[in-house]
Length: 200
Image 1 (cartoon, rainbow, N blue to C red):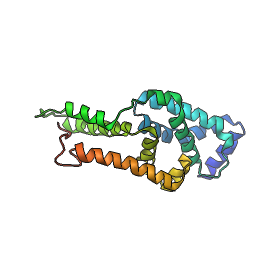
Image 2: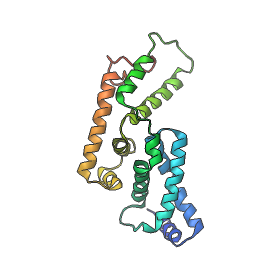
Image 3: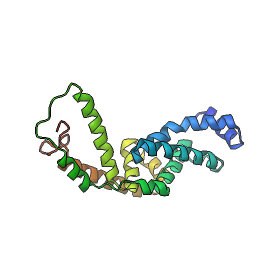
Image 4: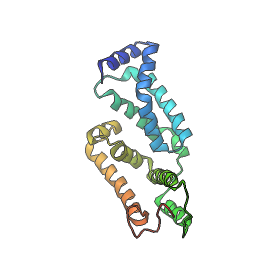
């Protein structure tokens, strides 16, 4: 963390409005990126981002500098995403079984070529990846996003989640195993024999 940001955090803790704005601007993109990967729905992610940033501002006085500021902000964000009732109520409860059935039901035998095919396939792959994230329960989804998507060091990810490093590794391993098992069985990008391939 830069000396400038440290100064802004201290000024914000002392009630400086301009410093609050600097601090919020510094973290808002990271918070939104996390919310998008956990919630997938853009409107839900934007609303969650705003509420997380409000929480960051209101709890800023509790930041003691024992961890990196970024780690502290992610901890606030993760606590909100795991515990906010509105987040739990809006979670679609998608499962790998339901997703598999939807994929197979939507396959076509001989897809018609399209001039925009590359763009459409790219969008489809992103949507498919996001759907796979939604198949994980919130606890394992957060571990997967922190460990494999945002590529946090395991020590920092465990600190964000306020759990032991061993516990984080266990959650991440379970999440990875579920994703790998699904893609190995059903995704043509992972296995040549899989029924589903992006053009289909």
